[in-house]
Structures are given as structure tokens and as C-alpha cells.
Image (cartoon, rainbow, N blue to C red; front, side):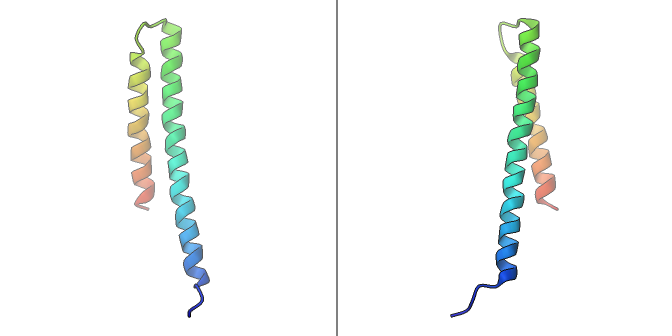
Amino acid sequence: MEKPNLEDSKKKVNAAAKYSAIGFQMIATIGLFTFIGYKIDEHRHSKTNIITAVFALVGVGIALYQAIRQATK
């Protein structure tokens, strides 16, 4: 029975850390843009939260762009 190679296990841990960090960054980006949109709607006393929805979608687009760019490095 072979012993697990230390290099391989380090590479797996590094890859897992990299991809989990990308996920947290996506959550933060989407959350930030949604919060900004919410505050704008709150300031404007809007009956509908159109700005919140638009900013949330922009946040999703930016988060996906960042995730794809980092994953292809």
C-alpha cells in the first residue's frame, strides 16, 4: 500500500482553498451591490425595489466575471 504523496495533498488543499475563496468573494460582491441598491431605493422612498434588483443583477454579472477570470488563471 502506497503512502499518500505530500505534494498531491498540498495541491488539493490549495485548490480547495482557492475555489472556496472565490465563492466567498462572489457572495460579498453580490451582497454589496444588493445593499447599495437597497439603500438607494430606501433613500428615494421607492414603492418598488427596481434599483435593488438592477444592482443585484449587476453584482451577479461582476461576480461571475471575477470568478471566471480567477478560475482560468
